[in-house]
Image (cartoon, rainbow, N blue to C red; front, side):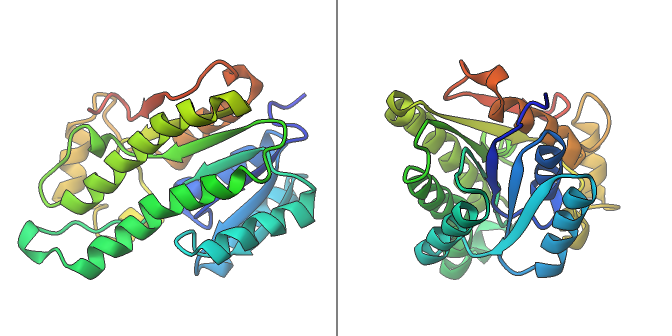
Length: 248
């Protein structure tokens, strides 16, 4: 039996990158998957088609995790499609690297609303659906432990994500809800290509600072996400697992 057979998972921000990798890995592992997206409908539908082509079950559901009404709609759609929810992956996130003097109120709120408020809102809504317990997995970053220059806002959001997981692991443990964090290192995604990181000196620096000598791929993160959502991790709660090739 596959590790996630009979489980239903919501993955936020799953139209591309790490979220898409997790969604596809969950489908392969037997879960029914809700592929959430904010704006990239085509990307989300490609992920759904890949899962279903492999014999899995998946639906795409639009919604911004920064808006409570959208979050409620995402979970209601999961319930309608699959009858329950067992797993939440808080992956939706945005980033921008700016020097301190270029930080604006709008950019601060854009990142905190998605990365931090979105994580809280989605986990809050999951409480209404996790009748028999559940697993929440937050996607953080090694940047919370080792911030780089020009990342004050993004690093702060990921530090908050780490803290949320620890606090909620203590608050929700009695309800048999586990909350853990995966902290990726540098990962090659559509986002890093769009941001111009791939092929730049920044990429070279990140690889040089990674003992395993390469950028991560979404599948590297997805394998750990499958573990944390599975019964193999029933005694893992409030932990942060770095999946970074040794980068710190």
